Image 1 (cartoon, rainbow, N blue to C red):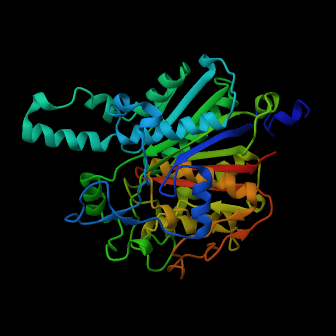
Image 2 (cartoon, rainbow, N blue to C red; image 1 turned 90 degrees about the horizontal axis):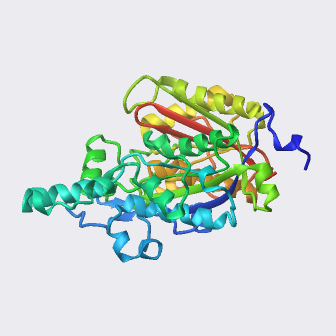
Length: 418
């Protein structure tokens, strides 16, 4: 390849993904993830992580059979909240997948996102404090619950001494972590970045709090059909746990070391609604501007996009706002749209990162997975929602969206492997 082909339309280094890893309700590998998504199966089921029989919501999407011990050892696993256990495991898999990175540790960085952090640790030790007193509280509570724990653990385990950063922009955090990682490669401040997101909020307080917000679906009698992105019968999201990470580097570096390339992060948009702490801006104006920003950054036009991996939470306000935003950017004939959350539920910071992974695999295979449980479009939903079965699409750029509480928006334009 010529030197010029390693640069984008603005003369910046092209950024590619050379490693992926995930721990999701679909399973422990990216191939597990894409297989479940293509099946159209929902992973929502009764909660097993604790006795939820007396909780307002009794189901969620859990990561099956996750064992942190192979990644940490018994002693160190006990000193990590499950959010960091999941995050480190996904990041370790992604770094292993990237092969012999061979970079200066000072030039290797981490951006690990979470929306909530170590909620379980806080909840469990609050109960210990109230029942057994302050002297029984674990001395590891603070390092276990702090949101930046995952970034710190990854850096220490791999000896990466570049910046280890935590992004905490709620449901937009995983996508934003990958976008900010791409910016670090572009500006030359890092040679390699492990970027992704992790979440574990399936706890009593987590379930109760999201339920009190009326954010969760209450279909306790039918969990598998509860998450229904863009569908007329949607009534809230299904809380999920999980993590996903990517390894980012320049195309020139990846080609130079003979790395496998999954795809290219070509455009990144991020902004704020500045409207409401939980509701999206009316008409999806913030989301539309975010997607347009990602297109502009990539040097592409709306008609260049082959499909959209939507935020698509299955809530009334989010889904209609995102649909309106897509109409604003793409017109009446939108590209095919899919939402992973019908199958996987909502992993908060883990959602956007896992959706980037699934988008990369969809581009690899030319197949957009269906949106589980979508049957009839809700009122005001005027987009082409892929449902029923996977849809073959030509090789073309895709957009992956994430929009979070606090009005945070993030969109990525992802290209097939060059």
